[in-house]
Length: 70
Image (cartoon, rainbow, N blue to C red; front, side, top):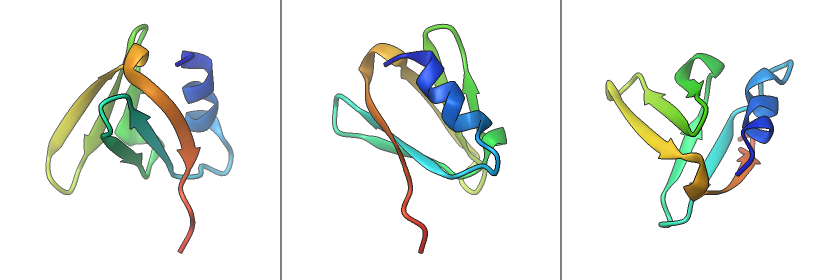
């Protein structure tokens, strides 16, 4: 996955929640721009409700998609 694609999702105005889908089948929802940190080769997704974080290597990210609004 290209870091520029994820950067575009993070910087959208207004921000739209999105999901990161990994090669192992996991998916991680980003509901707020302050809950994601894009690094050179990794993405950190933070879940404030659970006080946990997940580190995702860019090489394992298959897709990034906007979340459907409900």
